[in-house]
Every structure is written in C-alpha cells, then in structure tokens.
Amino acid sequence: MIWIGSHVSMKAPDYLLGAVKESIGYGSNAFMIYTGPPQNSRRVDVDRFRLEEAAQLMQESGIDPERIIVHAPYIINLANSLKPETADFGAEFLQEELRRVTQIGASTLVLHPGSHIKAGADVGIRWIADRLNRVLDADDSNVVIALETMAGKGTEIGRNFEELQAIRELVNKKDRIGVCLDTCHIHDAGYDLTEFETVLDEFDRILGLDSLKVIHVNDSKN
Ligand SMILES: [Zn+2]
Image (tube, rainbow, N blue to C red):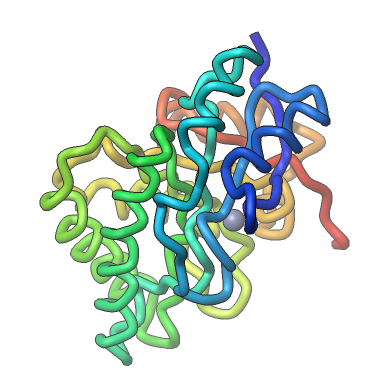
C-alpha cells in the first residue's frame, strides 16, 4: 500500500474536518497539516478542530489517523544558543504541539532541526538534542518527531544524514526520533537524486530505513 497525500489547509471554521475533506477531494489516503499558521505561535484551542466529525469521516473514507502528518511551525529554533530564550520558547511550543498532535490522533510531527546562527553545527546539534530531551522526557505519548533533512541554507542543521544521526545519538528516547526526507532539500544539499537507490542506501547505512517516516516529494528551483 502506498500512502500518499499533500499538504492541506486547516483553518476556520472546519479545521481538521476541512483538512480531511480536502484530502478526500484529492483521492489521497494521507495528508499533512499545520496546527495553525507556520510563521507564528498563535494556536486556537484543539476543541475547535471538529475532531469527532473528522474522525468519523476518516473512518468512513479509510484514512488511518496514523497517516496524518503534522508539520511544526518554522519559528521553532531549538539550536539558537545565542538567544537561549528563543530555543527555550521553541521547546515549550514543541511540548504543547505534541499534545495537540496526540489530541488530533496523529503520531508523526515533522520538525526542522534548527539553525545554529554561527555558533557552529556541533553546538547547534547539542542544543537541539538537549531541548528534545527536555521535551520528550516529559512526554508520554508515542508521537515520533521526524527531523527534516534540510538544504543547509544559512546555518541550518540537518544538511546531511550524519547531522540528523548526531542529534538522535544524543537523544534519550531514540525511538521517538524519526526522519522526514525532503527531496528538494537533499537535492539542494548536494545529494544526487538521479541515483536515488544510492541515496537510499546511504540513508539506510547512516540512519536506518526504519527511521524514515515521511518523504516530502517536491521539486527544486535549483
Ligand atoms: Zn518542512
């Protein structure tokens, strides 16, 4: 079975119910959502998401809630050691986001690892892992945080499989860490997608294919 879908909007008044309807309109059996605007941290109460009607419609349409992928907002930067309050705010937001993901019934949360802002990748990786530990050690759900492969723009961490593995290596609850493979980002980071089998072999060797939770299939202007 191939699980495939697209990013759909989740907005007032129908929220999750609207997202499910849009997905069904595309004939998909999976979909990705933000719990609110990706560029800010304002979130409406989950009570307004119309969860029961959405669950009912998903059941009728054969969409397993496991196939709902939630994408965390861009504003989270767990790696910002130069502004610790930003990293800590990100951790708090992530904690709440895990609760929302659990309430929605989903079990995968995609997260951009963060940018080290000139502190160096090693420092950034440690900061991300420290805050992931703080968040995950206090969370009993089974939601997997899928760290996304990044292009390496600016000081982004996650520009290769090794950096994601370095983060996971430092996380206590390793089974709660997965990977979202973004084809645009890995292309721009220098992976040759015309040799996709080779890329997957490398992924398997460094991260393990079982950690691959989502592939974000998209093209690249580059
Ligand atoms: Zn992303």
